[in-house]
Image 1 (cartoon, rainbow, N blue to C red):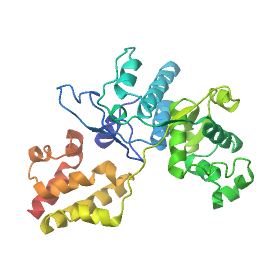
Image 2 (image 1 turned 90 degrees about the vertical axis):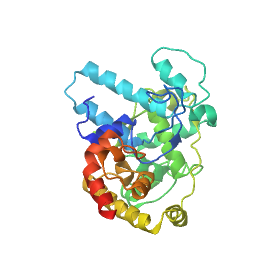
Image 3 (image 1 turned 60 degrees about the vertical axis):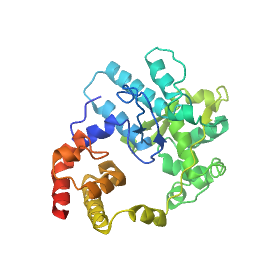
Image 4 (image 1 turned 180 degrees about the vertical axis):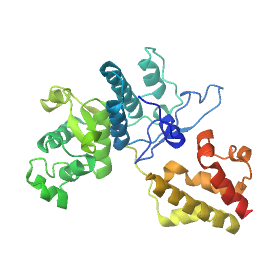
Length: 312
């Protein structure tokens, strides 16, 4: 896979795959983290559109077919790591042919996910993909399964399909989790050339014919967030710091709009709050701020320093 040249893009790819949902993961002893024996926390954020984007980059690269196949297999292994139902260290080391006992440190060891027989759910999802001609993405397929007669569903007469409304037992978040895990299991391929359309792989046949059982992990319950909760978090800042925080948020929103990316890809609120409190005046001080790695500093350092210096 070609190495991204944009510093922001490189920073994002280095943190696995970014995007729509942000589940918290404590991935101890993964990569450099934890090598000094001290606890280390890592955030992992990813979604189906990221998988599609990486598949597209592989397909469009100038590499030979054998190399493209190898890169696609690596991407599948990475997604399987993200959706792993057991110790992350074991999954990581098993990829390199090593067997180890559970680390008892990662998020999955600390709070093992609940597993369930998702064969029937998988069959419903795969059937929906097949009956719609393998031309649609997760959002549309979820609407069909949950029986939501949207304008797009009616336009394609998908409200007349046998699969329309058969998935009312899961909410939208639950179906997105199912589709991600089907992709991780190699049962579904995300085609970026077709705008993220899901397509069945050969392995999906066994599931549809009831020849293969599919075990899924239940998605973690999301914490409800409210405007009041956000206000309370911000109110911990001093009035002057809060004014700078809001200025930094506006800068982030404008920057995200220019780059057509979600705001959190630029910087997280925690980083902005710390910038507002510390008010760094040099690149060296920026490097002490949570979330300000070398790529972020190279990309945004001068703009941020102009804002924090101006507020001092």
